[in-house]
Image 1: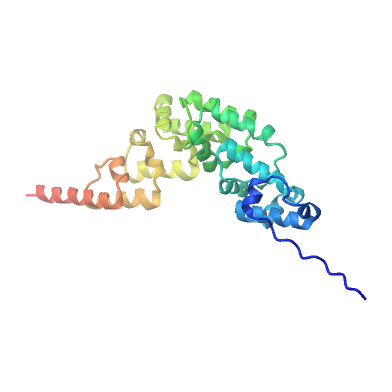
Image 2: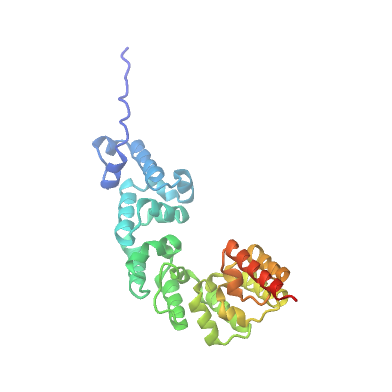
Length: 289
């Protein structure tokens, strides 16, 4: 009886070769579906840092997608958006359905043209914009990005950057407009509100219920200050109420320095703040008879 011995499975080709070539690297690979699948998993895990099991679970179509399509997509994101394989992996972890994007030229190129064209984002900021907000790549130009840009233009945003591009994925009716209206409800004019938003665009990313309302309540009720103070220092809403605003206000009260402005109270580091507070205390002691 003659035993049939199967030839050993050839090793995976070097990863650099996988990245360079969008086609199978040998006739053995073409003839061995199991090896092709292993190569795909290897590329996901080691080049993109994407968990293959999670990606396959969230996007079952990935199982039948050829490695060549992943290589082509990664190459497209690199040449068009400036994303490295690790950058692309970060995007894919958030939106695994992009791994089987059927036609990047049809689905992603319109977003690219919009960001560089109407949105006027400088190309050097494009990569940072996408990494800060990968949702840009999966947003409809006509239904989401263009209406948001129109609203921002009317507010006075002349150009966008990697810091403000994420506003493009916010709903005008459900997110952007209600925040502008809330600030106006505090007694600020439309002009004053717009000036605040342009000085601190992050205001349009904060929650009304979890940020604006409790901080305004403490500003007025807890500190006895007027809303006009946040008009002068809109970055007030960027600081933590529990870790920064309340503790520093308490120290001001204890040190008799309640006249300090919001900017003077919140902007300095802990060391600078303690030094400034000590100086105020010493000056008060020096003035005592």
